[in-house]
Length: 530
Image 1: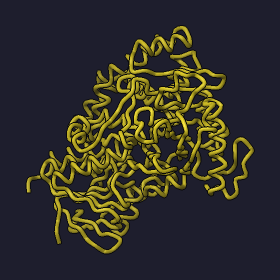
Image 2: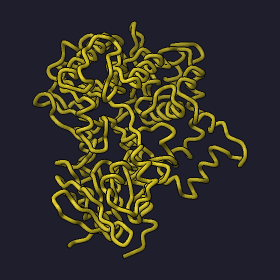
Image 3: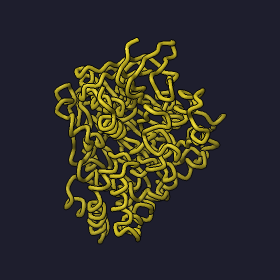
Image 4: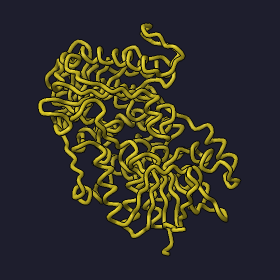
């Protein structure tokens, strides 16, 4: 039986980043993927009509553009087909009554835009960017570090208690809610509204502890980096990483589902597939798996796993779901405010209170009456995704229940509270009607549509249980040193030679490859030579 230095279960962006580092260092690596092709959330298909291509799940690559993996492999990936295109108008918001705002990749432009909306809000924006900016080196360092390492402890102390005794201003800012941040800095509902929806992208609600920290992070990221798409679709990132890994000697096998991690003499030594094949590893087994999947399924019969670990894994919590409506359009969306016509990603919302209302209704298992909608138009940056003069767009309902007890608007029959084809089409009609109030030409421009309900999201990836695309709740009680579970607060599992990567581990959600990078660095530093 052939053995490998490392076997990686799953082939999402973290797995591919991890394999890129290990194979570059000369490790023999085998990736086993359940689906028909690698990539996880990086998946591009012709969902609607011939000539129109859509990113099913992840559509934007700002986190990868900012990642250490892009620094280290960007030129290699470009040589293998990855072309990322950015914009200087990354985000906008459209509110009822024709109100709108735009964020640019320019500090002075953003101060002027905020000041236009309400006197004093420009100063609020400058304060927000300055506040997070002074902590950015430590914060972004921690996002690519194992938080259990002594070096991380030093960074955490510098941020939280720099004098070794008293909590810092950052410690306070780290824990406050987005509502507290936005209402203290801004009077304008539009400027509050341009930032509030981004909290949902972090798996938080605007009243959640720690959501204010993520408001700062998104503000800094949008202004400093903008927004990026991959020409040809996000799957081009996966394809270029695969080519790099294979060029460096790695192997990838698809349509191969792993159902057991093999333990011998108290450590992980390989995996067994559903078809009964076994593959052995000499240095590491790396699983892109959530803790419940890992400890209750892949390690279900192993006595080496302490009971407290299995107990906590069984209580691993999932967050809210999402719904995607992919559209093939006869023309590019034309907004009430024509400044938004060139913005690649715009939220439709009734401001901070609208975001709060959506999150509250979802928490109570109600279909949101006026959901927050993220409108992405990748053809603004990549016209190759549609025939000439046409466009593709995605309407993302960013916060919606997996199962529901009722309709907050009191309009839709809910049946048994599950996402049937009829329910998801009725709800898509509501979303499109709402969006058309802001984009007058939207409804009449639709040539085809494809809807991914929370149930479809769940079926798309074993880690997206209950339609949660972030692989588990990111509230403060299940993040940072408490992620994935408090009895395993890192990527090294309780089983020697077995590691976890993916959004269920630090730094969490997003297409940045952070956990793949962290585990690769730990392995390369600590694993003895063969």
